[in-house]
Length: 336
Image (cartoon, rainbow, N blue to C red; front, side):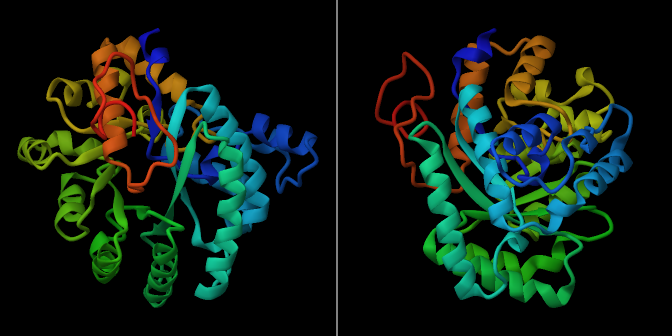
């Protein structure tokens, strides 16, 4: 298939969401501790929707409060899978709760974690991190998370934050001060919006959240003026097709807006979201889009360009050749 010849960039993936039975069995056989029995981690099925995902989170409950040492073998195994699928750059959403609460101790722990990750990249894949901030975060915890994010922004530990959770119950406006502080420290802002909520949540993410990227963004296509705005402002949308189907954000693949986004030459990426819980892969997502919407080489090249250009970590550690037969000299084209 055409997509197999194009290096891939993933911008929307939750570390906890990589957990599945084969991965857990693999790391257990390698002698690492697992916190749940592999056979209990059944993925979300089609038609199960948000409740199915909530049930999946219960099945992996011990990992919600796990430290980085328990997550490291999970991440390393997932990184091997990304390399096998031709992924050259990935940003992962991780919980601040994986690390020490004190900002100084956090910096030290994160440096050790990051050093281990770098050694696992082997010059084949660059992995960067966003701190995940739940919309349900208590007000009294927001300032503490700001301090943690600022501490790691100064050391280059994280390149951005991601706001996720139920949109209508917890508006992004609660984090307005956080957005301002973190923008001032050079961090990127990604906001999950327009997945199960409406177009107004996307507008809020742009106007109040100062979002650089929108996670999912499905509801935008119910509002023509919002689509026009996203095009005019070149806002990057992180599409996650299988996730959108299993969560009920899209009725079926034929009605998914990614085909229209391609036709409008919008700025978007193709991602897995939670490859473990939704039983999907980057190869599978690209194959699905190619089969359903007839994406060609030029379409996937545009996805690669836009995805890499939308990254939050501006420094690339390895030369990344996005596709063949390009002229050198541009960040968005050939060798970076």
